Image (cartoon, rainbow, N blue to C red; front, side, top):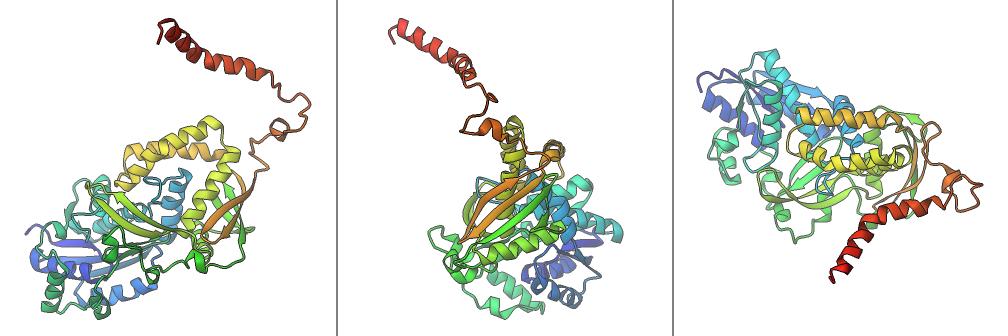
Length: 409
């Protein structure tokens, strides 16, 4: 431990990371640099971080606004792949970790720190994501994971430690019998713990923060037009926006219509099942709309290939392999496929639903109305051609059936 002189700590300002800050000072006798990433979680979490870090004796404090980089370089590339884990999870926590890891490594270099530290538990996925990211970017970095070292393995022990060391506590949260563990960024807010540890229990309505319930959503639907260029949304209702502003706008619109709530039991990387609830209004709209514009502009086999690769791509992100050569290789293929994904999608938001009601692309549409029509196509498509196609595809099936018949089977 004596070779650790300075540590960069991923710091939220909450109870756990405040305890970790003090624990690092006591256990490793080192200086602690705190890093708080602003990735859209809101000022409610960011404002107290600096004051708490100063109170706890941090030698340097970084609070960095990474919202634009997060949306542009991480969330948007992921949505070009239509990535979704286990059919439900839009990877809102997973995709934030590689950016945080990247910045932690940069700060370690800037400040001459020997190690980085995080507050992820030994049961969760984030420990893997943080550490794989850091090792990929700086292979000789030292990582301190207090939850894998200390004996403060219950809330009571954490609170006792905090009292012994005069660590500020949010007493309102302390008094809750079933507090939720929450993580928020531009893409989503997640909830774990409390009554959610029983997968039979329905979440309390008061838990949700970003969206109204579908039952309480407006009775009048809202129509939105999303303009795409190279697979990314570049404008909403004719107004050009940055990726971060696109996400903010869609979060507000989706939230007021009850869009984006999910209740999931997922398979964690470490082998256990865990339940989480998520609000992802913008991501839910983006996924539906992106598939709609691709349906119009992507070649059939390219679209099917993307669908085959998507689960693999999603698993790489979920399991912490954003900075891996295989993810980068897949990203190259995905981005190549988006060169002709240009157009406009019209969606309707209503009572928790995102309904695609129109799509068009003046430059890249592969939809040929002369061929697709049910009316007279004036010879554009010869229906008799289907006869040979069907017989060729049926040849193996017919041959096998004849052979079985001859053998009396």
